[in-house]
Image (tube, rainbow, N blue to C red; front, side):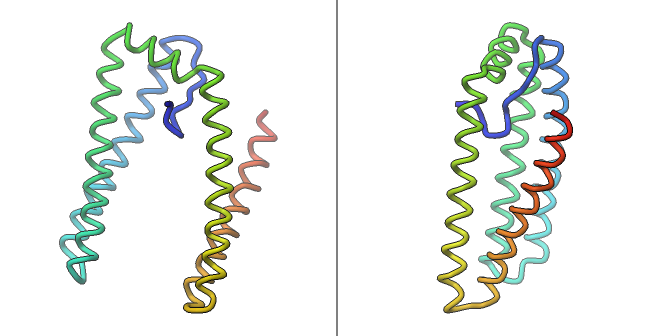
Length: 153
């Protein structure tokens, strides 16, 4: 299974190396954000649940990012594994499966948030309003990215 955000469009190992180097930078930024989240949560958490929740989430993001950095660096050092990983990530079938799975997941989340907004409307109007705003943000982002990609493709 290829990760949701891992599909690549590289035709050579050199192109794939540059993609991996960009991913390493992104992973490093995520590791810093995760570590900062954990530290801030431990320093300024207002109760045990909140500080534990955010410090655990931040630590998890940081550790996962470090694991992906190490994995990417090891791939950059081994040409055979690099080629195998490139072929797996650039496979048209895997990209199509990932695309369809992402669309289905997005639709499922959209419907779940919409249903949750109606349920919460009876109990807490603020939560319902936030959920509706998430749906509006999703639709706006979709429209913006559709416009961007339609002009590029």
